[in-house]
Image: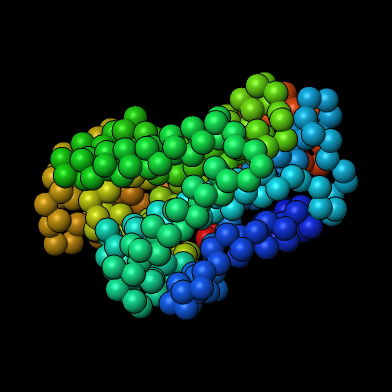
Amino acid sequence: MDLDALRKLIGKDWDAYRDFLYRQIGSDVSLLRDLNAEVLSHEGKQLRPLLCLLAARACGTGAGGVAVPESGSASLPELTLRYAVAGELLHNATLLHDDVADESDLRRGRPTVRSLFGPDVSVLLGDFWLARAVDGVVSGTVCDSEVIRLFSKTLQDLAEGEMLQLERAADGKTDEDAYLRIIYGKTASLFEACAVAGACSVGASAVRKQAVSEFARSLGLAFQIRDDIFDYSPELDTGKPSGEDIGEKKITLPLLGAFENAGHLREEELRADIVAARPGVKESVLAYVREFDGIGYAQRRLETFVERASAALDVLEDSVWKDAMKQLARYVAVRKV
C-alpha cells in the first residue's frame, strides 16, 4: 500500500484536512498568498498529517475512544484536523528556516523560497506558518493542554537536535547515541507529537496514546535513517545530490556503520578530513561507505525500528486503521524518495 492508497482509505477526512490547511494559511496579503501557493504547488509526502489522521482513526476503533465509522466517510472531529494541519505547518516552517540556514537552492527537486525570493522572505513565511500552526493548536472550542505541551516539546526538540548537530559537526565526534538523539529531535519528535495529538483528539486512553507514541517515535527514526541512506545512494533520483551531508560535516548512520564494520579502520583520519573539509573528502567517504557496507548496516538498524513501530501497535484492536499504520511503517522502510 503506497501513500496515495492510504490517503484514499482515509477518504473524506483527507479532503477535510486539505480544506482546513488552505483556510488556516489564508491571508489578504497578496505576496503571502503567492508564497503559500508556491509552497503548496510542490508539497511533500505529508506524512505527519497522515499519521495524525490514522492514529485518530485507529484509536477511535473499539472501546475507549470516539467511535469511527467505515472508511471513506468524513467522521473525525475538527480537533483532529486542527492537529493534523498544525503538524504539517510546523514541519514546513522548519524547512523554510532550514533552507536559509543551509543556503539551500533546491527542496524536493524544486527551487526553494529562499532562492526565488530571498532569505528574509523565507524566514518570514516560516514564521507565518509557525504562528498559524500554534493558532490551530490553541484555538477552537477545545484547547487540550496535553497537546499544547506536545507541540511545545517538539519545538524544543527541534532546536536542541539542530544545535547538537552543529556542535558535533564542529568537532567531528558524532557517535550512534548522539546521532539518534539528533534525528529524534529533528524528525521523530514531530512524528510522535502528531500521532499522540491525533489520539488525544478522539479521547484515547493512556494505553493507546502510549502505543501510538512508541509507534511514531520509531517510525520517525526509521524515516530519517532512510533519508540519510539516500545521501549515500547516487543511483537514486531523490531531488538532491549525494554527499551533501558530508559537505555539511554531518556524520550519519551509514558512515557510523561503515566505521563499525571496518573495525574503525581510518576512522580518525576520515573524521578529521570531514571537519577540515579537505578536498576530495566526499568521494573518499562515499567509497569507504560502499567498501564497508555502511548502507547495509544503516538499513538493518532501520528495519529494527520499523519492527519496533509495528509491535507497538499490538495493544490496539485489529482494524483497517491499525493495518494501515503498519503499512505506513513498511513504506518508510523501502521508500525510494
